[in-house]
Length: 177
Image 1: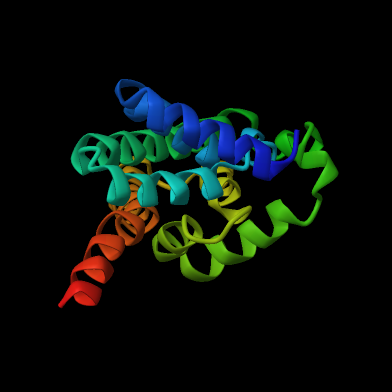
Image 2: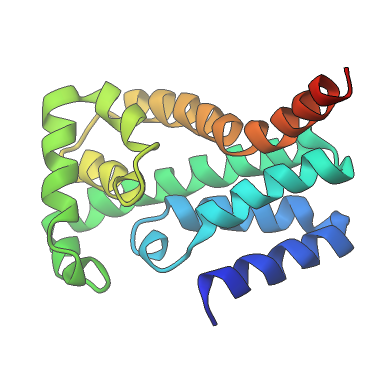
């Protein structure tokens, strides 16, 4: 199955079964933020599509946004915890072993920027899940990590859903005027 087919099928399902939108978005955001799984799950395209679907169909924004934020926060928290517990051994685990550049890149970002790097890492594809892993490996204080994790999870959920949800409505209103 191609990325396009997976995206289309998921969006069609969400359109037909709106009650499942929030749980699906939670799982996608969790998988997109979890080390290991984020490399296999093409959730960004689907989540952007859900934002557009919200704008087109009138699905309630806030429950979907909350699900995206919670999923992202939980995925990063678990990645951080895995880093704390497994330390550098995670580099030899699949699928990270197939992407040997991710952890060093995440480590450079974390070492240079600290908590700000954890926040920024949320917005950069494969680094999204590797930076929290590195923060755990480097034993970043849990309280500091969680503050940054929650703030970046909220910002990320807004950034991935709001452009489609509200941008489309704004554009339609602007074009009608």
